[in-house]
Amino acid sequence: MQAIVDLYGDAPYTEAWKGSDNVTPAYDDDYAIYQDLITNLEDARAIIANADPAIAEDISGVDVMLAGDMDRWVEFANTIELRMLVRMSNVTGAPATYRDTKLADIAAGPFLSDNVAINPGYNSSTDASANPSFNTFAIDVTGTARQNRTFITMTGHAYKSLQSYATTNYPAAGSQEIIAGSGVFYPNVTDPRSARLFTAGVGAPGRIAVNQGSSNADVSTPTVTLPALPCRIGLIGNFNPYAMAPNQTIGEYSAIDSYVMTYSEACFLQAEAAVRWPSLFSNEQFYFDEGIADNFALRVASVGTYINTINTKPNFGLAASTTLNQKLHAIMYQKWVALMGLNGIQSYIDYTRTGYPLTPLSSNAIETRKPYRLIYPVSEYIANSANVPAMTANDAFTLNSLSPFWIQ
Image (cartoon, rainbow, N blue to C red; front, side, top):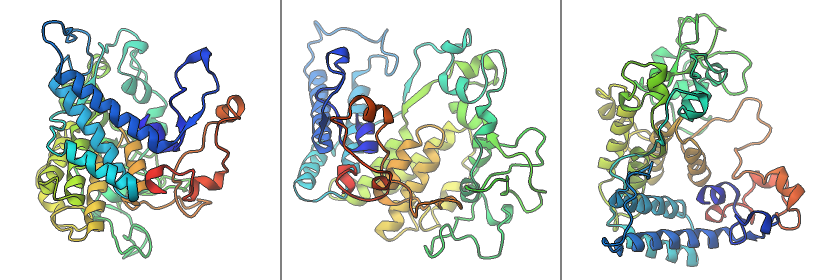
């Protein structure tokens, strides 16, 4: 429900999930939904804290996420609530007072100490039993590559973000500014995660990306002859977390964990909270560096000197960033890389909230910015027309009463 509110604003809630008993549920105010979700988290923590060990059921054998570890469920609840309250960073008035009260309640944590993974017994016996991410975006259980693996390629923006100037064929000297007039330039650092996330296409002369809006694969090293086959999704960086598939067999890949929430995301949330509310949270640099380090381990990439190097770059490393905007950009940039291919929707929502990390529009974009929200599904306008709020396509690109409450 948090994701639905973050993407759509008002949504069915109190009358939702009743099946055939109510196929046309009313829409609830998005801020009211957020408040009720936070109450649910508080109730869950209270149930755990007050459970009678004499009668509490042992769910370790059926809990496919946290194996019945109630301490970790509390960490997860706290971290989800922190995510929601950080979303509300720019609200004012009564919602801001509410946010600050709830932040004070959870400031001491504990927050996630590890990833929240899910694995109900993934295996390679059938496509339906395999890890759904690997089976959908990489290879099926027979060893046949899915079309998604080659259809989904690296954007030119991602390539430039993760490669040095010397290894990128910029069209002209000085054209490394991310968005003209922003004053923010690509970091000029080769990120070892880059080659893990995307690998060269079969028979391609190197790793090649596609500028958004281009009809050709047109971003690569200066020595590569273009156009050529673009990058494809890398197996190790996307489907071999923490080297869970050491022999990189189909059976091993098919059995890997999926991730509900990563430790890296939790770290970046705490870093942002420390930047915004230093009276309640602290250790922004530690959590920033920790989020990067854990994501390198997840991607099976060698961190080397990357953390020290990136921390010399304003807008990309926290240590060198002195203004609030620079710090926010650095945190959102690293979260964007860390969640790439895992939970990228969080980065989109962060972008609508903060405008960071800076991301160029497609060269053939019609609008002048990215949308603030999604448009309600056509199925709602067909089946629930009396309740779904009326909106136009233009409303998605304008801040108005239809926008999620935390950016209105």
